[in-house]
Amino acid sequence: MDGVDNSPQIADISTGDVTPQGVLSPADGEILRGPDLARAALEAARASAKSRAKQPGRRATGGANRSKRRRWSGAGPDDRDPQPLGRLASRVATDHGWAERLAGGNVFGKWAKLVGEDVAEHAKPIALSDGELTVQADSTAWATQLRLLQRELIKRIAAGVGDGVVKKMKIQGPQAPNWRFGPRHAPGRGPRDTYG
View (cartoon, rainbow, N blue to C red):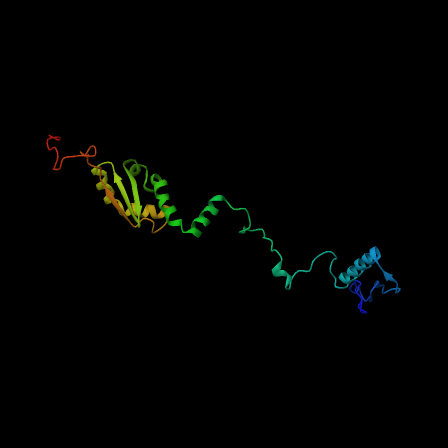
């Protein structure tokens, strides 16, 4: 076709010349094809590797290939090593901005450990919003005691769950009874002779 040769040509095998029929052997000048060509290419690659003082079959390290290759972790811990579930959960929480809410949940979950068994027996946390923890005591005496211990309790909570989670406390006493039963009630102060 128009004098253009479309036959496949094979690259030079250590100074072998390329012909349309195959590759000329550098040693004796005969044309190599098929398995003979593969053997000659292998021998040429081995000789080339030996001349560069490298082992055949191993890829060269360094240079531009180094950034593309996967780097293996060493003996120390790495991000690619298997991670404990708690560490992964805390990483997801910080990535999504949930860390503050989880710290608030720790106040409720670890309440007895944070403030001590005595205080936890007579007071319970009700709400946490904007750094203010609302605590309800089971008697007015315990509410007064908690108001006196407020700074120490905030320090204990900060040591247990982190600084800034609880900045101040609002301490409530026990709830008074409510005389409103049902959907309707009469206006006014209600019964006064109940307590005698």
